[in-house]
Length: 160
Figure (spheres, rainbow, N blue to C red):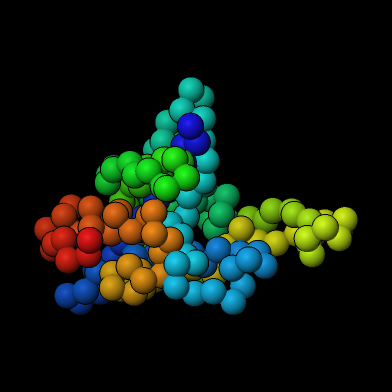
């Protein structure tokens, strides 16, 4: 079974709540928006690393900066249709600016069957968005984390 973990930063903006999500990089996602964003996250081996430690590490690897020092709160673990499991932690991101990113990269053969290896960013941008927008933008398997965040903050869930 594949395990991944991520940090879902949130901040209150007036009466609204915003979350920091990242648009997936690479040629498959370049022209997509809805369902093409992710919580900064990545895979880990639970025999070697805790989900909490992996979430912070993956945030640094994907965005190139440290997450806020606030204490992470586990929102839950959800299974994707592929069977992969993702554990998400909420972190208060008040005062965290979505700038200065240095995105991690990956290599893949591109174009397909060309024999050429190209380098792409893991994510190509990260932004603060409202919860309703996040519900449309996030990949389907991560959307339950939004409802869990709303419960944690005592505002919902409005998002299912």
